[in-house]
Image 1 (cartoon, rainbow, N blue to C red):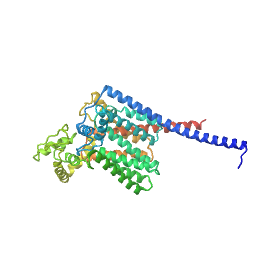
Image 2 (cartoon, one colour; image 1 turned 180 degrees about the vertical axis):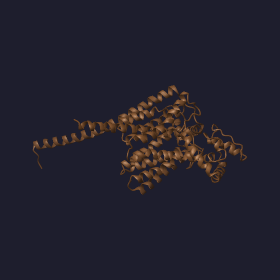
Image 3 (tube, rainbow, N blue to C red; image 1 turned 90 degrees about the horizontal axis):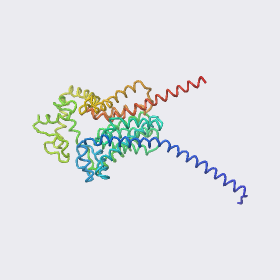
Image 4 (spheres, helix red, strand yellow; image 1 turned 180 degrees about the horizontal axis):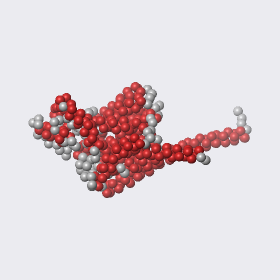
Length: 438
């Protein structure tokens, strides 16, 4: 086949214009994606500035020994031998210490802080906020006292909040992109990691299933089965890597007995303190000292595994024989969970004022739920569902205001999302009404 010169030039010009047009479309889409990520990058930069300020002014917080001892062990020996508490947070701190021993704890906590902000931004995007407004709302979360002043404290509140955000992002992603199996797989892995960090986050699993069922996710049974398999495999693999074998934490009977014995009502704000007199009444002279390495708790330490069966038996016996007191304690545990945490910092001190700001978050969030327009769909119900799943174990077993911090962070972000969406609706309504008079 022969082509004239004009035909050849026409074919070349057509192909060039086609490639240029499609290339331009591709570059435009890439630029659009990059522009939507720019607020996230600016948010993370802002987070680094906040962290640097906190490091320079407040510095390190007093580490909680129950997290610190396993972290140091993992950083030095690449293994956590204790199986009393969940090991997710301590193992992550240990990874930071493997990178740099002197500043490993700060590095790990900074990484958790930035991951939390990233998941918060992603959650707000799925709630319906633009990339810019999601970053601005997340910046408010970044300076929230319950989070910012604790960036470099060795405590698992920020990591727990991070996983609450991550699971909510995973659930909303599976509903939005229901045909993509990667969202399901990522959610299953996140749930396995979350349970490894805090065992009571296992109650998030039925929340996921209920939301999937309520909003008609296709192939529900197959997805639940796949999530169970992959989530369990993640948990088993990680606990084996950290501990040497799969395990479930052994603090369950300990907490159950702390919240269900004849001395519990005398120690309302810290039910674990009831263990010493409860054990003394049973002829056991116990000493509670979290600064003692949990790998060798000793025969008189309440964490000792030899008391596990006794804890379970005595707690269940108390619940059966004192049903009225048990129900009463469930109610006042809910009150304790919601009360301000002023045990260390009195209300009139700077630390107490920061605690009161955190205390105000859940009431303000509930008020916003009543007064602001409700968002339809899963994005509007997922935060209340997660709150119920998170609070329930504390009401049933042991409670303390300090456990509320992850919910304060989540509720603040949800409140900001509701305020921004309500404002945008009002702006759109005003614009449409103005257009009618033009």
